[in-house]
Length: 314
Ligand code: T6T
Picture 1 (cartoon, rainbow, N blue to C red):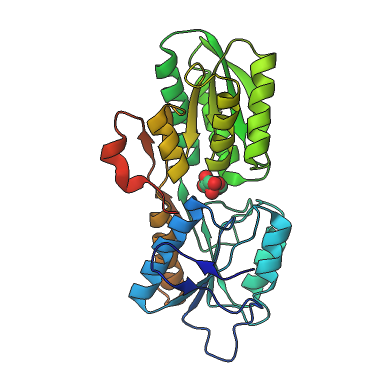
Picture 2: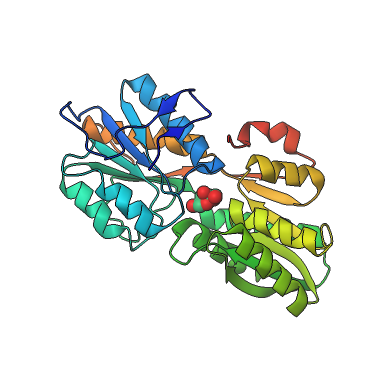
């Protein structure tokens, strides 16, 4: 994987692409492996993690897979080699497929901290830091119901990939909450493989098959961006309410333009910062918190200027 340029500290962050941590002592070395490269949520997380590592005198190296893909991410985990960093901060791209590679790094002595997504097996990580994703889905459904204002219609959920702990939980939280609004009927959950093109074509198909479609919940950044494209192509912007997750520059621009009616923003910088804090606590024998929850923020066009601190970096 290429070295990553970040928008936060300036300069190049990264290490040897072979992943071997060399002859130097590994005790102050942390490795961050996000879900995917060049993506505002994980860039913001990396910025938070880097700032915290620097403050504490630790060295953080980030390498991210080209796609949100377990096989690609496994290669990066395996490349940490037989002498891994003191701690691995990772957003597992698959709750089960990433278990074996992560367990191997742990068996070679690294402390494991989950940031954002998590493994199904809760015995591996020392600490997991994420948003309350069920609550995020619920919040999105409440916003959807407010927007519908009693109007009857169908609502589609766009999830990413089966096995992504975060977005799968958001979809379920949304569907559960939707049951409280008899005027809103579920049009089901569709998977987009985290590809904007697939999200756009699912929207095109849903508009054709579900004439009473009045809302779409897109469970993350890429699905939201693709859903907006699908609505734009069909001339349905504003006619179908779109609630997205995350707050990338393009989503924020879309909210301003009226393509989205709401966004649920996470605080990825805080997830990165707390991930580093927990890693260091584990390494220094201080108390570690097993589960930490980062905040969520419901952003609309009306309140967006007051919430600018939650917009992601790119
Ligand atoms: O929504 C975030 C993250 O929380 C999720 O696990 C994967 O997708 C994002 O990175 C947004 O692209």
